[in-house]
Image 1 (tube, helix red, strand yellow):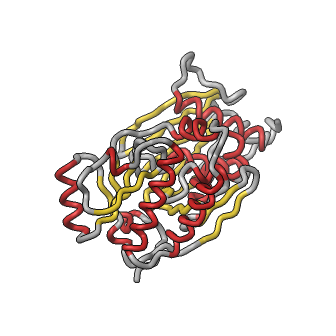
Image 2 (image 1 turned 90 degrees about the horizontal axis):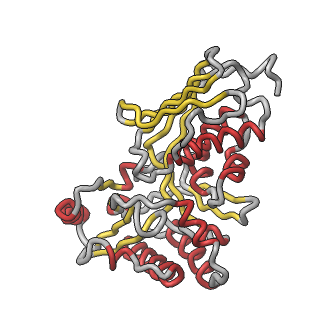
Image 3 (image 1 turned 120 degrees about the vertical axis):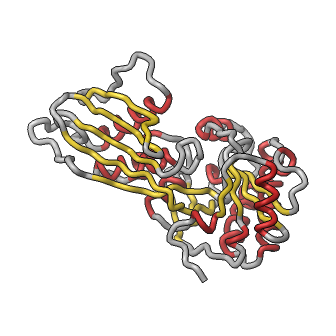
Length: 317
């Protein structure tokens, strides 16, 4: 490491958007395309330098600190004897970044602050945002950093980096990301409901990858459905696509679809998002969206969003 002339970081700041994986969850790990959209709720990372010999890390949401830690500059280890999972991920991320760029954070000390516009429990891609921001700070590619720390597909990282809706595909070594415009006529009818049952995505990924037999026809079908979803122009068509996607993955995962677990009696289609069994449900009502929103408000106290209000850089009619 060049400790005599480390790079200057004082005053640097990076920001990246969150994301939502609308189609292709799990199947993207086996080569299916996924439809991923960025959302406006961002994460910002700021750095200042000091002479402490430590990295003082603070993460804020809604004006309050929700996480703090102190790391040693020398080896990026935590001063805590029992670091939390969040802390372990940060250490892993910074260590991987230094492996890829040996001059990374090799000065006398730093204060690093992250500010999240979305609740970190909401599953809007805070880990992917952090990966992108740290990669930019370290002057390495987000994809390389992602591959060093995760077995996930990287769709969330690449979407956050590109800041545009994409059709993403990977063979787990390389990837392709085709920018698209996702602005269907029914965009205002796409509802997101947070279930309050946040899932561990890493465990979901590991479980799926451990399956010895993956039905190639299912992967091909999900691949096709992702493309169809990106190109759908009518709400009825989109509902049929989402229903098929949910059914095919339910059969493969041996997990009941969202419609059997959540919001029974809803007049429309329900699709699981993220790790199945938690995080988000996407609802597409057959009828009026305002009536559907009121129906959900009577069923849950958890956050409800309209995708049209969240999606980033999406052209409006």
